[in-house]
Image (cartoon, rainbow over all chains, first blue to last red; front, side):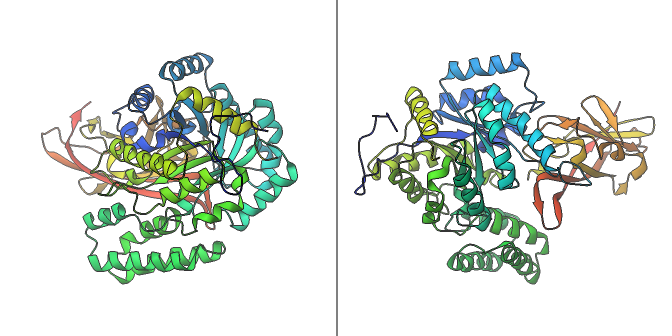
Length: 378
Length: 131
């Protein structure tokens, strides 16, 4: 039972409104980090100074040299820096590299060992959540429960396009979670599963690569058609859609763009509806506020940020939202720092419009996250 | 992902019949040697003989066969690897066109066709420095 008293507002049905925690994943700044403009400490200082937190998410294999091995001295320095900056560790994104050997996939025992080392790293670095990935089966998630318990880390499997909440693989996980009953098993909601359009900034990037307006119009029309149909029922339909983007590029004289259209059209811009998340909402432990850009009106044109925040607030979600800017892949003409600032303003505005607010104070965020994880569905 | 960053400008060196260039990982996270499937180095349109190519990483040098089962050495996103091979460059001030192709496995993305691999290419023009 919650003892949190910071918000007393309730919905008509009696659910206490959520107060999501604002935050960011350093993945959003990949181009600046990779380009050696900021090192890890520099980026963390920037996040704190410019108010992109307090929530802080980091990808282990991106930011920590030698990951998942973490030297105690490094962990100490990292923990001191987090405290100095007043940031709040949310999720350590870990990877299920089951294809790490060229000739075979990891077997179950190897995968458990591989994930255990990363979950231990999350604990050593002070992250309460480890984001895990879809290649982990229900059996493996169940097998990881004792590891999660040993290290006190919540495992939040990311629901990412081309999957979506009501996808059979996700429902199988949810049903297993329900059977196992551990409060340490849950999901990371990635907003890319529920977009409403092909990102205009990516269309602009294709334009800069010489794609014709006619072809770009057809790409948008093809995606819009799939949006009307809803998400693919299974992997076979997903494959057919992927192939149709490749075919469109080939038929229009730009076969070089086909795979790019397919990967992005199916893997970044998921066409499920926002209320699809209700299938797994009680198990959502963490959120990736995936987005691609901010337009001249200050809004996200292809991700329904306002609707998603409203959904979270109305369902009592008071965990973290990591703003996850993915437009950096193709947008090399705008500053990610400005774009992320713009998206977080939309989140805060949406939370207020829904009768609540985003938490931006570090101490309050720590309390809210502790409470959110302690009162998990089980 | 970020293929325009693969070749580091101004890092072409040549010495004793071998030529090297520094390359960056065009991906957001570290990958182990086993996921570095192969590379091609082409200077002024001439492909460097494949059997002479070597991959320098973390202060060590590998053939691609040696990398294929190496999960101990990782290519960190901030580090430059050194791709080298047998090719003689004249010691003049000429500009050379350098092309690098990289094939990488992405070990957490498993498709119907197996582990996802990506092929990335970069091309830059620079002078060679005698090492």
